[in-house]
Length: 194
Image (cartoon, rainbow, N blue to C red; front, side, top):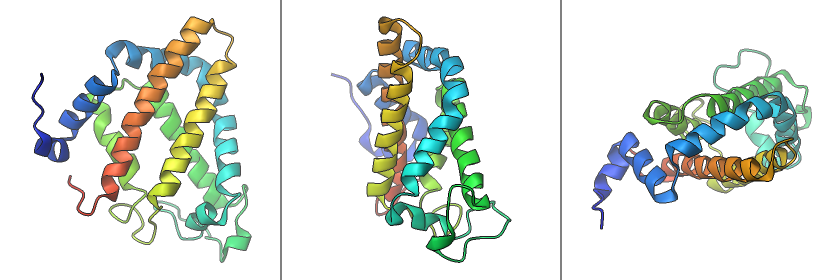
């Protein structure tokens, strides 16, 4: 039986990542499988982003987060929820961020060097980073990650690759998204660390 230093899971992000990866079974071969599917998924990222924002803008509970100024956005913000649509400059700005995120997880090595990035993805959706007015409820973050997972699985399933490679890619990407989800959820604790 392997001993895990549980308090260290909260204070050492790389240790946390390594524990999650080992427990879930996210191996170096899985990391390679994610990168190997990247060239197919890469050109599909704009379509995935558009579908994601269609869903986000279809619900007032998720769309409302785009009324306040987004961290780093310098243009005109919408005056109300009624002004938000897929072509608003602030939405286009957010789409670019999601596109960069998907490109990052699909093309960069998923190792200890990526851990701070995975953690920041969670942090920026809370008041702990970015705009202190923006705190996306955890239920919405979980819904977003579930939907993104499904879109990515659907896209891989439609890829012109053999079923064994598709399954390997789906399993690898699903494991990575579960790790990402943990790095999101940790910032919703009462007292997040790090």
